[in-house]
Length: 161
Image (cartoon, rainbow, N blue to C red):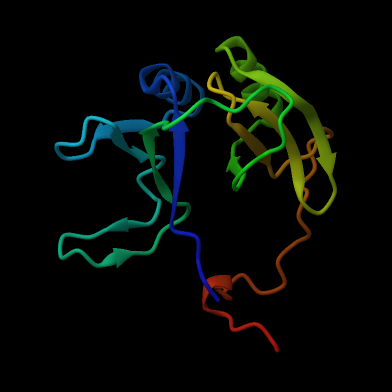
């Protein structure tokens, strides 16, 4: 089984995109080396990261990168080309509303998906689709059933063939 360990966002106007994601999700951006067109994204100090020896340190979530887009931004109404990023948040309704205030466009209003969470989708100011998901439904109940054995680490379990 392969684990997703990194994501990248392409942006025609990197400064505008960095401001949007910083204000909306609290992400921090750092220029990468001498490359003026790439920034690393620190999503959360608890996320997977490289330790002092260069070894991968497990965590909760992943880090990413933002790079200057080569070519035009996605056209409004065009099919999604690429993978979609969904970000875990405490309150999908509040983050969705704040994203629209910051210049994003709503693709789908927050909705409850029992057993999954409360989810909404937006387009960032550059037209990139992304989602936000919370583990609480609109009535305040948890979307997830109770875990039978909290000592089991799902990343260490080998799926049955």
